[in-house]
Length: 95
Ligand SMILES: [Cu+2]
Image 1 (cartoon, helix red, strand yellow):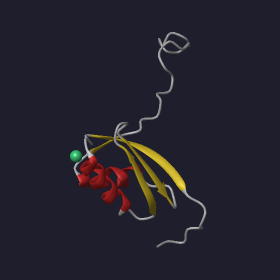
Image 2 (cartoon, protein in one colour):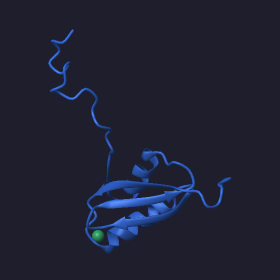
Image 3 (tube, protein in one colour):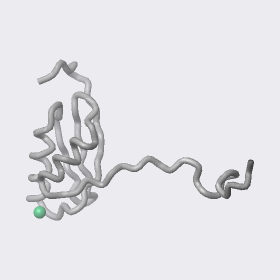
């Protein structure tokens, strides 16, 4: 175990594709739980969500790897695109 401070923890929610039953939930839970620093894994089967409580921020790639190990696919959390179309520079004719 690492040098985590008790009482602190980070919670992150990931979207996982392909989970359909309690067996899937168990597979994902056990793989993600095995990651370093993970304290608690909670799966929302209906929503396809995996909530992970960990001692320090987890690399999404590590979570993705664990999910893939279980046989499922992590849906990447893509940050919202900057400069959406419709803004003043969206058409490129502003400057
Ligand atoms: Cu299943």
